[in-house]
Image (cartoon, rainbow over all chains, first blue to last red; front, side, top):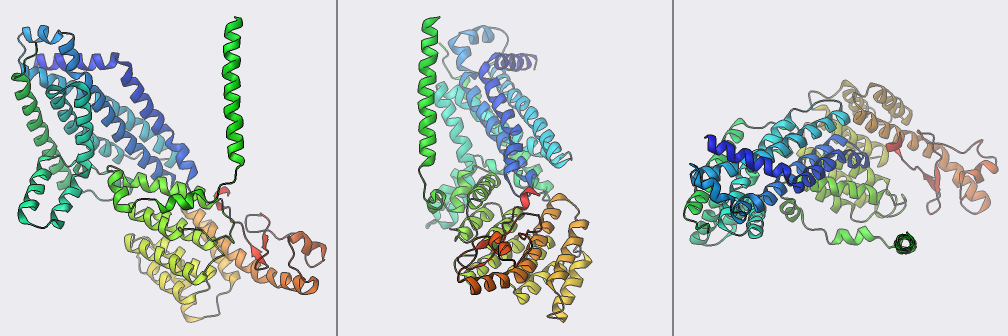
Length: 255
Length: 286
């Protein structure tokens, strides 16, 4: 595990050195702080608007960071030939992949923690009380990002950087539309077509399973089973996708 | 140095051209831009998909947009697509209580168009809100008062008030109000309504509740003033053959001592088409 930890720490360090990360984090913080301005435009409950925009920014900027960082995640190591130095040491390829994944996850987590703290402060200013459910919403967004980061790692191994980023972005979009794909299965004629669409649905991650934002904003009860199964669902997807990424990386000719 | 100054001057010159163009463009009157844009808004299902898991945010954006848009209108004008836009917002976020309340408020400000159709739209919006938020007695109370004061529809008012009363957390004042409305058709005067809402403003538990109660107080005061002042306008019109364009004309004619003001101290207006009192509610500023 020492090798994995060292690669993850190095990935995080590299990302911190990258100015593009600051740009995204800066934008995210500005966006969350500016929710107060949007709140001022409304008639009625300002807090709802602050929470809605804040939580959406949290998700959007975390996704952007995952997508953009996937571009440099592996390709930079291969292009700079530093990957050979790493793999020449007693580091196995799966450790390299896992380290890279955990590095990417740490970057996203750091961003999420920062945005959540800023959002909680904004809600404290507007509503005069701390809303700890925002922490829960942040945690569930992190779960969504764990899945997305696994796909980002997989595509970083599988293809060229820009294409990989586009494919990660596509997973994010499709992941939020897959619930509609499920609804489509009920409308389609023919058992075979319905089965094909159902298979596609189960193979794609349904990122809406991690979306508790409406429940948090409206203070609705959240079933414990929904949260528990969401953790299992994310864990299963992350494991499978990282395993596939490892399979591809093991068989990849890096020269 | 000279060259740098020249470059700065060129940039400043081009920028000033952009500023002048913007000013000129702003002066060109635009005819109901949002009204047309609304025609091309996607369906709620499509907007939900496009929001990528953030339908609440999409509802907020539309809600803010609608407030900015409809606040530009004058009360006698017929607001376009009101029901459509608030249905869209509340389809995106069915628990958005402000959208039901403010949507109904904006509809009521409208004095032009078919009033029966408007009343139906207000009722449909409130009923949708109460279907989605059955525990919200405040919304049911607001609906009851809107129908009692604005539409003078006692039956619908009692229908909504009874919905509010059924909620265990509803304050006793609503029960008393329903009792009076139900038992004594003419016992409840506008003065009673004003006293009721003054007390409700004092007892309001939070800023939102206070704003809503202030709004109802405003309507009750405006309804009382309308009853008192509109006969003066009719007398003026009968005597001089035209409707006064402002309350100053009525003061000059000696029918009033000063320009009448609403519950927030702002002067009333006169609707020249109907020769009636016009109240410009600006409760957000209070």
